[in-house]
Image (cartoon, rainbow, N blue to C red; front, side, top):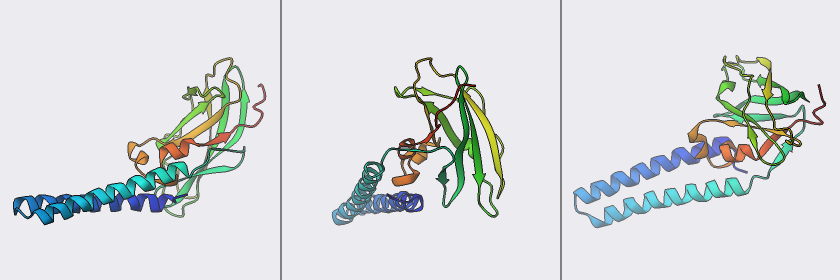
Amino acid sequence: MIPVFVGMLIVLGTLVLVGFGLVLAIAGSVTRRAGVVRAGATLAGLALLGWGVAWVAGYVGSPSRVVPVGEELSFCGVDCHLHVSVVEARRNGGLAVTLRFRNDARREPEYPFHLDIVARDSAGRLYPPSSGLVAEPLGAGQTVEREFRFALAPDAGVPTLMVRYDGWLDYLVPGRGNALVQSRVRLGLGETPKA
């Protein structure tokens, strides 16, 4: 599994190499030097190929799993300080889930409102929350709990929660930082007793 920091370095390195390759190709074209054009195009192409291989390997190499109640999912930027776990879940016509958001950073805030949280039933149907949001930044060392409510279909079966970053750039990062990979790891809700 490709760690988040390495995945981010791969994306940045790819952008730098592709940019440099394109500059070489344009410079070679302007100066009418075919060898420089080929070198620039080859560099850009190899950088994109390397990123593509890392992206596919990161996706294929990440197994689907369900994290038990109480265990945390970690979300990373440059480092992994934002953690989310299920405190309690109960069925009450729909689904009510209390989530704990924890920031173990020493100085910097984390931003749980950048997370996309949806319930997924056993048939694969997705349900956005009808209530529950952490709108404010989570200060260094701070923990907060919020209840999220989901209007599940009556035949929803055993649900789980998908939690992932909601930015489109997260789809480009190979490995654990990729939003598609994050969707493969879900928070389990236990037995979800009736309220």
